[in-house]
Image 1 (cartoon, rainbow, N blue to C red):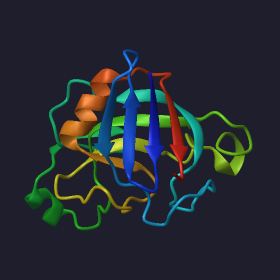
Image 2: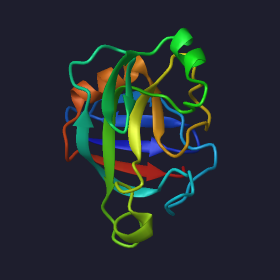
Image 3: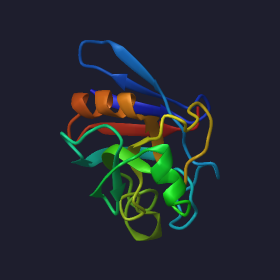
Amino acid sequence: MHLTVHIASQEMVLHEEDGKRRVYSVSTASKGTGQQEGSWQTPLGQHVIRAKIGAGLPANSVFVGRRFTGEIYSPGLCQQYPERKDWILTRILWLSGLEPGYNRLGNVDTMRRYIYIHGSPDTAVMGEPGSRGCIRMHGEDIIDLFDRVDTGTRIDILLS
C-alpha cells in the first residue's frame, strides 16, 4: 500500500494492496512546492507517515501543536479566533522525508517543517492550492484515509 499526491491535479491516490485505488481531492500549498524550511510550500519527493495523531477523536477536533485542544470546530469558533488561519482538524498524518539533503535533515527536513496530511473545515476548498505547506483534506476523507494507512506507509509527492 502506498500514496501518491499529484500537485497538478490536487489529488491523492491510495494504491491498495488488492490493486484498488481510492482518489481523494486535496489542497496543497498556496505558495507552490519547495523544500526549504520557512517557505510555506509543499515538499516534493518520497516520504513516509511517521506518526498518526487523533485516533478516536470526534470529527472536527481542533489541534494546535499536534495536541487536541478540547475544542470542536464550528463557524462560531472560527469567528472567535480569526488569527487561526489554517485549521488543523480531525486527524493528523505527520510526514517524514526519505531523501537526505532533499526532504530529510537540515533546513529541508519535512518532519521538522511539521508537514502533515490533515483535516480541514468542510468550507475549505479542495482541488486547488490553499494550504500553508501541508496537504489538507475534508474531515470524512481524512478519517477514511487515517483508518486505512499505518505508520511507515510511503507517500510520493509529485508535480504531475
